[in-house]
Each structure stands twice: as C-alpha cells, then as structure tokens.
Length: 387
Ligand SMILES: Cc1cc2nc3c(=O)[nH]c(=O)nc-3n(C[C@H](O)[C@H](O)[C@H](O)COP(=O)(O)OP(=O)(O)OC[C@H]3O[C@@H](n4cnc5c(N)ncnc54)[C@H](O)[C@@H]3O)c2cc1C
Image 1: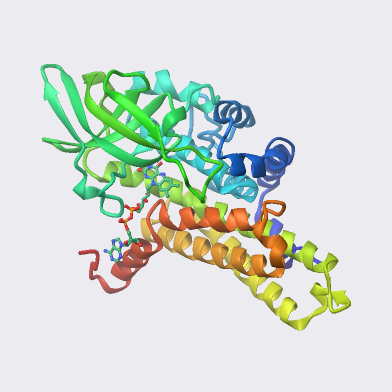
Image 2 (image 1 turned 90 degrees about the vertical axis):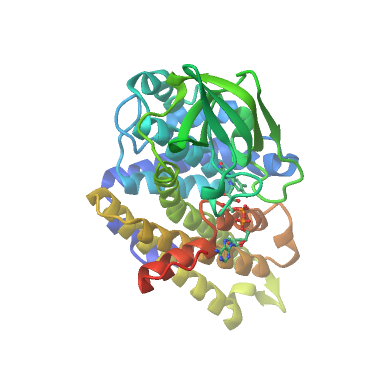
C-alpha cells in the first residue's frame, strides 16, 4: 500500500526544513486540535484566544512575513502549514489566514512604523487577534461598490457603515476596515471597544462552525489620523491582501481533501459489504484512484505556485487558477469520500462531512469560484466579463 502523497513522491519536492515544519504543525494539530475540533464544530464555540496563543507559539501567525516577531518563512512552508491546519479543520486555517495573510499582512505591507510596532509582534505571538473587514451586506464579489465611508473631521476620521461575514470579528483586538474616502478606498485600524464600533456574531451557520464569523457595525466611529494605513490607496490595497490569503487556500484545501481521502481509504479497508471489504470492489477503487489523481495534481500545482511565489514572479491569475482548481477538487473529493462512508459519513464521528460543508465556505470566500473563472477568462481572452 502507498499513501496518496507518496504516490506522487510529494516529499521529494520539499526541503528538509519544509518537511520539518509540516511535521511539527501536524503534531500540534494531532495533539491540540483534532481531539476537540468536532465538538467545537458541533457547539459552534471556539476557544479562539487559547488557540491563537497555541498557534502563536507554534510560529504560524504571519509566518511568511519578515521582522516584527514573524518567522520569515518561505511560501511553500507557509502553504504546508495551511495544509496541515486545514486537514484538521478549515475554520482553524481561516483563523490563521485572516490573522496572518489579511490583518497582519495589511499592517506589515501598508502600515506606519508605529502601527507595525504596536500590533505585529503581539499578533505574531497570538496575544492579539485581528480581522479584515472588506465585505458588506450588499457588496461581496464587487467590493468597489462598498458603502462604508470615512470622512475627515478636523484631524480625525469618522467611519460609518457595516461589514459582513468577517472572520475572527468578535474575538479581534483590531479590525482592518476598508472604507470609501474622498481619496478613494483607504484602510483603517479600528481597535475593539472604540466608541460606535459594535460586533455581532453570525449565528446558525452550518459551515465553518469552528470559526467566528461576525458583522462589524461602524456608527460614527472617530479615529485619529494615526489609524489610517498610509501605504494603501485604492482597492489594490485590500486585493493585495486577499491574494496572500488565497495562496494559503491553494494548499489548505488539499489538506482537507487529504484528510477525507485518508479517512475513506481506512474506512473502505475495514468496512465489509457483501462479505468483502468495500476497498476490494472495482467501483470503490475507481473512486479512490480518481480522488488520488486530483489530490496529487492539486498538490503539485500548489508547490509549483509556491516556488513561483518564492521567486517573486507569481501573478494574481496564477493564484486564482490554484484557488479555483484546488477548492473545487477538494469539495468533489470530500463529497465522493462521503459516499464511501455511507451513513457513517453524515456524522461528526468522521471528519468528512465537516470538511465537505466547510469547503462550501472556502469555495465562496476569498473570491467565489465564479469570480476566479472570470479572472481566468479575462486573462485568456483579454475581455473582462464581470459587468
Ligand atoms: C465563512 C465566511 C467567512 C468570511 N470571512 C470574510 C472576512 O474575514 N472578511 C471579508 O471581508 N469577507 C469575508 N467573507 C465574505 C466573502 O468574501 C464573500 O461572501 C464573497 O466575496 C462573496 O460575496 P457575497 O457572499 O456577497 O456573494 P455575491 O457577491 O452576492 O455573489 C452571489 C453569487 O453571484 C456570483 N457572482 C457574483 N458576481 C458575478 C458575476 N459578475 N458573474 C457571474 N456570477 C457572479 C457569485 O460567484 C456567487 O455565486 C466570508 C464569507 C464566509 C462565508
């Protein structure tokens, strides 16, 4: 027998350091996350602060950033950490992606020196949590339509508007909020507890239940000029952050798929149907072979994109291609694995249905699959079909 990753000699593509990082994150997930994650998912409650500290001491928060207490690791190392975290649960990887690739990256890339010193070391350690508010109730795929405004009043800024579907919202110490100004879209750091800033959790989710999702309400929130991210002007600011987080998803989605496939292979070996192991039937083997192929191709694509990112040549279209393909295939793998588990496949005793419903969110956030298709369509034809 050979594992799905060994089939593609996946490890030969990785350096020793990368394998080491992958194994360390896997060990911590096995010890600290896997025993509890089904319960967090079922109750919809996450010990986010405790988890952030655990992940901070593991060094995965903002691990691809340089300086300010961040680990300064390569893109493939970061991707492998996302893969292992998402093999545990997409909600956990979301916490890490939003903290590191959206909130911390925005501060690291566009912030003033004071903002970086104030927030990044504490966020890297998991002592403080951040969120990223771009989406609004009426504007998700088309953030250019955002209604949240920031107006200058004397030396201050006053923010009004609502952000929706914000990961980590109610557990955050700081929200990176994108708002329309007279100078175009600008980013602001809004500390929790600022007067006029309230946060309400989204309830009744049946996907990403082991993740906090919130609405941010800004009602006359007054901020000093020092809260403005000086380096970000226009939508390219938030879109640059999203590109970082999407890259992590290219690997992460394959982690969820791998966990499903490993579970299904083990289950099919143990489960007897018509007096023989389920794994011994040709229909089962065809499913397993097809899934291993898609998984292997997705992993190869992820590492290839990681190497391009490390070389500094990766394009947003390439990240779109990776996100579109790998999330779509991961979802298909999760669904197919679910069939192999029969009725057991619908319970939280196995991780498969949890991954499947989580991946529905992953398909939608960080650019829906349709939007990434349109990005590729534009790249291939030169014609934008968004409007
Ligand atoms: C669990 C979760 C966590 C999230 N976390 C965050 C977060 O931390 N921060 C944040 O800012 N946002 C977050 N989001 C929001 C997410 O990014 C948006 O949901 C996403 O961008 C889609 O926007 P929408 O839900 O408004 O859908 P819509 O934009 O209304 O899209 C609805 C449907 O229309 C399709 N569509 C849109 N435009 C076109 C077009 N031109 N042609 C064809 N079809 C089109 C879409 O693909 C989709 O199928 C999160 C979402 C979820 C579910």
